Length: 336
Image (tube, rainbow, N blue to C red):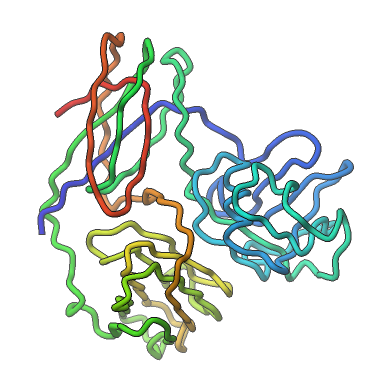
């Protein structure tokens, strides 16, 4: 099927994965700067955070404090390895609106009943959009799928914007192309991976969750035992061929994702020598709070073209979708 992919490049400031000063925070041992074990700095030392009561609202605060975009998951059980030194925070409870993790309630600095096998982690989208003058350029890609809403409304004297449309004729396999999986319509349920005998043959299974109540879907994926060099699970907010990827995992426990579209797709890919079911998943529907977020990767990558101009007016460009992402840029010119 033909798909239009929008690549929008904007100027923004590169941010480090560590904040500064007393009660600073950092993410350690992840795949990129905005993923990893949560560590906080207090009274002259770095320490970890216990996963007791750890949840997505806590992850949202961490991602906000680090200017790392939106929260994708809040894994516990030392998903990103066990830390060293003290456990500095336990029973952390955030509302999700706090600016800093130390603004959330907790048992007190250094008060805990945890070991490092319970170290909390966070995965963020790694995107932080903040406009800067062209003289302070640091460019990074912001990937947006079709149907997201982009509003360019206000005004700034000078900066660069990169914009390109790409029509891709690449066919995406339908559900029938997968060798296993199931479609669920109940408001809650559970399922496990299909047994794999470790023969290194490629196995792909697709589970689609599409409850009749059309409410947001929250899934918890536990007991993930895959070979991370060959196997993985991918979770999508909607149909697999048209929606944003919420995350990709291959190990750990209690990874939670929320789909706002009323449909969720779960893809299992295996081609290793490790046998077994691979994972257990439980889902439920409800009025879960979801922050709209762009996907963090694209199948094919292209290079945008730079347009740099002195602003003399306002432009407006809009794409509409049920998952609306509002980005307000101060001025933009673009290729059509």
